[in-house]
Image 1 (cartoon, helix red, strand yellow):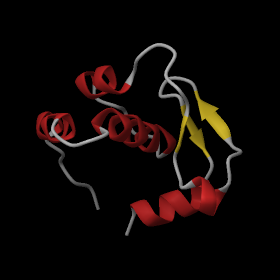
Image 2 (tube, rainbow, N blue to C red):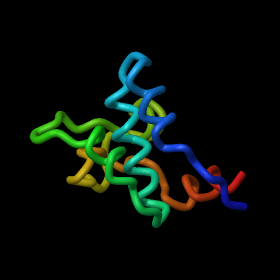
Image 3 (tube, helix red, strand yellow):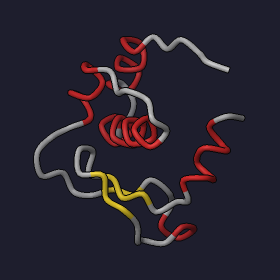
Length: 89
């Protein structure tokens, strides 16, 4: 099942919530991991040089080790199969 996403609305929403940039980075990382392109305007909001790494999943639950996606500065500390399973629900 595929959905159309209004990226302009996603960007506006993230701009108005606390920790919006963090959400951009996590969503961009998820899109990359699932093999989707990250829209250009969304990617611009999600990147900034020398960001402090953040974790895709809660460190207490998933630990602190994993691959780092340098574009988004996100550590993938969750199993990719579990991520994909949740994404298709």
